[in-house]
Image 1 (cartoon, rainbow, N blue to C red):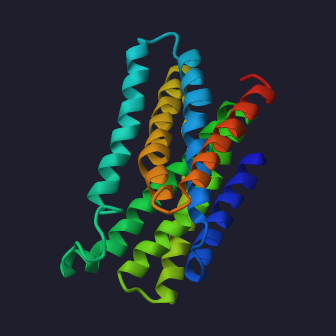
Image 2: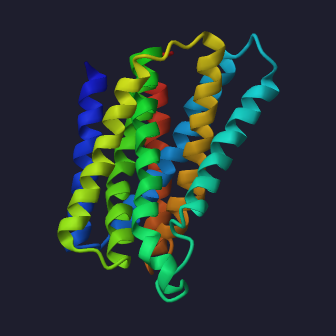
Length: 242
């Protein structure tokens, strides 16, 4: 039940972020910093400890490797899709002609895995699902932002931006329902959680934080990041144990 609610919020927040960007981009660096703190916080304070707890039957190095794979896959995906890799004046015309479509495709794959993460989280229990869904939903605003910014750089029209935003918003729904057909053992769950921990560490630490600190009010971004950590810490402490 809660899984359906959170996947709906994921879709809604993606649209909100996209439409907000089409009209106004002020203060989004604070939101990026907050989401970064939450993503890194949920990785360190919840997902990694939970994966270590579930993975007692396997070599712990496999869990560590899964974290690294999650980090590297999205590093490679992001840069191969040319997302955030060059400025408007730094790329030649041929690259920019394809930047929008390839960039949004990468973000849509990311959204599909976000939806799968929410579904798998609630498959474990409501606490893990809740803790995974919160930063994903917060990051959804930034997904919508990134989708529209990439397309605007590619000189796409408002209608094209909205159409691609719909694609980006639908992808998590498919990921969520796909998770229902995946049966995972305790060991597999440990590796999956570790994978998403690596993913969240990359998005939070290597993607959102640098973007957040591009603005002049870096002090506000710093406090927002700390607040993101505190929110996750409080949730981990207050919610029922896994």
